[in-house]
Length: 309
Image (tube, rainbow, N blue to C red):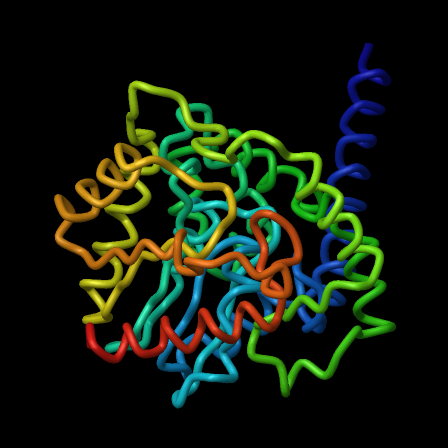
């Protein structure tokens, strides 16, 4: 019996020792990566976040739609594919600089999605030792994940290791010249696919993934309150916006979202219908602009921001 207990203790100690060693090695590589979205771009953002005047937060529609190179100020686009508002809230929690302009991309359908649970912020759990603000943001929603990450430190890098080593040994771009914006230049094949979709889509693309009666997700409401409070603490200007899309919404949805932000006392700009006339050269697909479309949109957004400021 004693031998079994001693063996168990020895295995347990070995497990945690190996876990810590693996974590230390991966973390050393991870901290030196500055390309790739899941790790590198976040490292770059954390390095420059308090030296820029304008930051764009959001998902792929922020990433590909707002050209930071067109602004007459230091700007960084921290849009990341596949992320939602909790990811934005966690990253925004780390800001320390005063008097910044923060653009937060939101979509009507995402604000009204009652099934959203905020799990996208777990993509940042590898940073909980270095950024207490991120840990404090995640913990109320996913305490069990924090506990597991504290017990098994290498767990934080689950699914991220291949990207870390790839971008460490073969960085995909010169990050020092990168301001976060990724333009889309549709290939010939992508253009053909989109044109075929336009021909086959017979019904109006309206209120996709939106259910009535309309209700703002309570979690989204909490996250937006957090974002607003953080921006006020830093005396920063915050603007929520929706970028152009071919997935349209009706007036009831527009009014619901506009009234919601009005009740929060913050600026919201709805650009979903920015392009009054359809031009296929402005689009990659139904929800993403090409570089040509993004430049036109960014120029309009830039002018609007200057008016609000």
